[in-house]
Image (tube, rainbow, N blue to C red; front, side, top):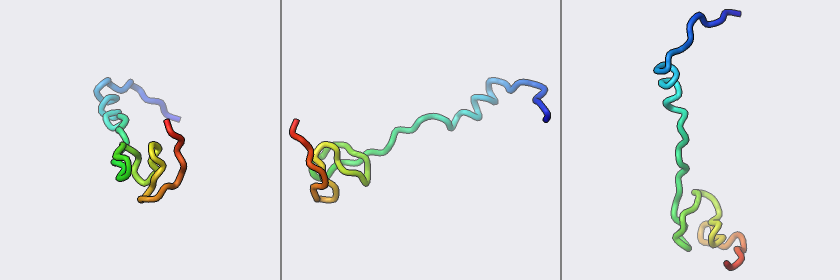
Length: 60
């Protein structure tokens, strides 16, 4: 199996890795309590999803 003859330069390595950064996930506002939550998921603060209470959240 062939091996590379020369090492890749820093620029070539960094250009390849330019798209490997982490991207923050999108957030949406809960229509019930107006807290930030992940879209299409039950709100962890109030337990509502699509104007219905899905889970009971204990009082804090």
